[in-house]
Length: 116
Length: 110
Image 1 (cartoon, each protein chain N blue to C red):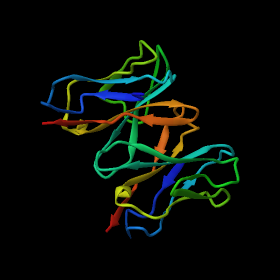
Image 2 (cartoon, chains in turn red, cyan):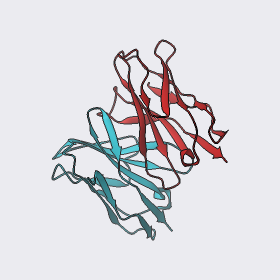
Image 3 (spheres, one colour):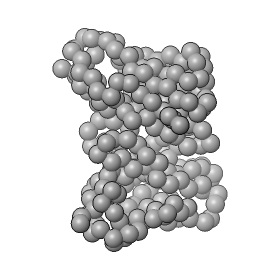
């Protein structure tokens, strides 16, 4: 069975500093995608970044970047120059290739607080 | 560019009542999904659709029904609401291996 694990229920960081959120997953697939979604207090699910497993280069979107370690099945999210607006729940997600068509399996989330 | 829209944003139901949560997308995506999110948890799949006229159950389908008569619309029907259905409901559509979510509907069943 495919699983997604986020081992940090809560984290905090000072404004302008860098923070890394961890995610591990388990799959027998070789080609796949991985995603980080942000859920601010408004509850909107916002795509932060996605990584394609066949690409060795780590994905980057402005202040957000990933450290993708395929052999270790690790997919961490690094937020640089943290801003107050980054305060949110962050979910790592992975497509359920063995089940429903493209359904995402979500981790339990990490609550990130950015402090002024 | 509306993306995925959901109505209503909030709703309170009494036990045993029924309602339909509306979801519309304007991205011409074939794949659409309904998830529920309980407090402190990630999302769980209720139903999904791979195209107009085709739907299938997800992980937690009991108490819900869906239909997909057009590419754009994917309504979720709750019959005989129960307190266990108190949750936030998200609709999503998928294109190019990426899912895009609506703003969610917060439902309370009392």
